[in-house]
Image (cartoon, rainbow, N blue to C red; front, top):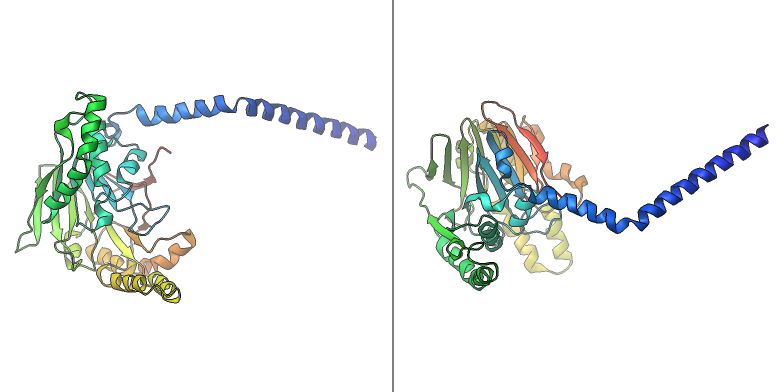
Length: 368
């Protein structure tokens, strides 16, 4: 009886394996067709919506289109923050990969209303050319994108415009002026000065929206600014690059979300030691120099606690974190200092602050 049962079981197992192999073979033979069907779905999801921000709940939405620094980091591109206030989209800094990440966040770069710079370090501006080009074509723009920044903006923008002039001409010649209107290429400079009394400049002041620039400490870079954005009853402060700043503590009083740069000295010293042992004294010096004009996670937490913000998001992560196992070391004692939630930023992080509430909803927003 047992022998027969065993033989029966073996036959059933063999038949099951045969069925699996047949199905696998059929799927393998149809792999190209299956892959194309998957590709068609991906294309449909990424091209079907020309006005994706219309689908967002009314409120303030903040996305990290770049949570990194000049260091290569597979999870964090160059500094870039997208803010959607109601149905208006703004970009703060345009680090490398900004335009591509904005598209991957299921947003239409053609809907960018304006760009704002915190300062002109290369890692905060090096994606500007591509962003201007993509915004122009995808938005069928007939006027350049307004670009706001402190003194020094004009030569930076002129340099990008000159570098992309030939390309822009070829786009219009190839696609036609209806698709690529020559008048819409590039950006228009909107330079602002900070008040000598307050260190602030109000850039947009509408009933439902206010955007304010304020001076931060990032010497020898001067001026360098952060931004405070209010939409209806929700607020966010973006620090930009800075050492610990009284201005940020002031501007962030009782705001919902503080997006603050963070640099771990403990991990940075590992790089200093590594470059020293390798005999690369110049890079060792660079790693030492950058200690004094950035903010540690603990200092960012002190600012968040003193300001009474609802959530702290750390970005411009220095040094890169190739493994999530390093995140606890990076945070240091920040969790003991700030009693609210702390989020260590990555590309595609998305925070929604619905108007008329105190909620902060977070997710990863990307289509592939």
